[in-house]
Amino acid sequence: MVLLVSAVAVILAALILIPVAVKVITGYYLEPRRIDARLDDYIQNFSDYVTEEGIASDDAAAVSRWSTRHKNVHLVVFGSGDSQLGVFDGEILEGDDLPEIQDPILTDNISAGPAMGNTYMVRFSDRICTVSVMDYSGPAVYNGVHIVGILAAVILFFVIVLVYYHIQTKAILHLSSEVEQVSGGALSAPIQSKRNDEIGSLARDVDVMRTTILQKMEEQRAAREANSELITSMSHDIRTPLTTLMGYMELLQNDCEDMTPEQITYIRLCSEKAEQIKELSDKLFLYFWAFSVNEGGVEPEICDAVLLMEQMLGEWILPMETEDIALAPLASELPEGTCMTVDTKCLHRIIDNLFDNIRKYAHRGHPVTVGLSLSSGDREVCITFKNIVSHTAEKGSGTHIGHKTCANMAKLMDGRFETSTKGNTFEARLYLPVAREGL
Image (cartoon, rainbow, N blue to C red; front, top):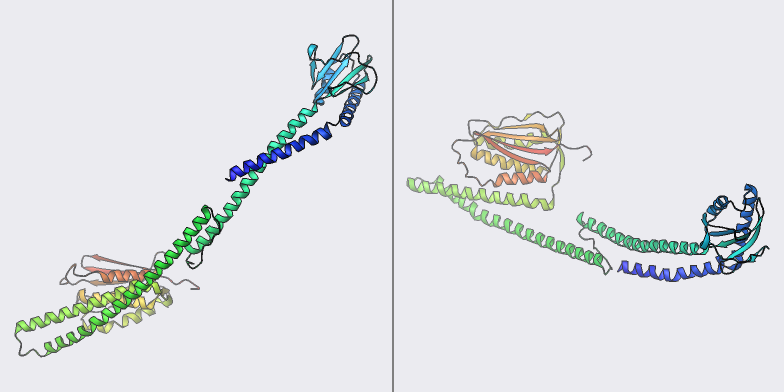
């Protein structure tokens, strides 16, 4: 459509401007008085040229040189008798190419008729001759006007197209800016467009997508809140009767003199299964917390790595001793005052989860070691936990929920969590970012 409008505008401009230009040329440039004035100038210039150069009336080469410098001028020098010398744009004319002028009058400013020429007397070096000068510049001027008109039409065409594309590009950049705001998280910023073209349709489609995303996010938030309430309620509903059941199991185990060995075994198994259910419910709640805390965000703090780890490990010294597991002193290779960026709640849960597993699977005759070191070009603090796995531990009996939970919580703190087993040595590594200045 734009190309069609541009073409129509160009044609209309040509139909209007070119006739006007032609009329101006006809009424001004080709007006008889101005033609006569140009011819007078031509003959005066030629006469001066002949006098200064001392040119003879039959020197065709010299006359041709003058004509070459004066385009669209037809010059005829009449000699005695039938002798004529004609030159047009530097080209020497002979025979039928010469104009027919009979009995030229040897007076000044005599019109030569329809050829737009005048006849003059010019003094050559050898004699005085009649010279006819004709002006043929009119067609050249017309051609120049047409060429200029065509160039103007082409320029007008591209100006219209470029203006249109500038408007389109401006609209696209505006839409791009609004989409960039939405992609940056400002989903509440509307994308508006009053255009009725493809760009307007695209803007409205993107806005529909934005509102759909907002709606889906609201639905997901409501679903997460419902899941949170469900997990919390389920955990409470399971723990309440489970705690009562475990209390009854403990009472039965403490008062078992009148029971048979088989009954005692059954009570012990029931107590172990109740403890197992409690641990699984705890892990379920912890796993859910780890994957839902991302919505609420973490609260990073800058803490001294050695002091924080000594404090958290100190809470596990007595619980580990009751399990006959020794906890070696913290081994630190960190420079003094090294700090790390950490959410203390997440770190506390990771350590609790690790030591819960250590109590179940660690060998009682070997101490558990915890070390601190720098990693990744001194950009991370590596916290390493090592223990020897008991040969009585059931391989593959775990659900690995704890490891997945630790990995997710480490990711929330811009860190990472890895585990490996070499022989009977289990190693867990927690990487946390070294605190940057100004955080």
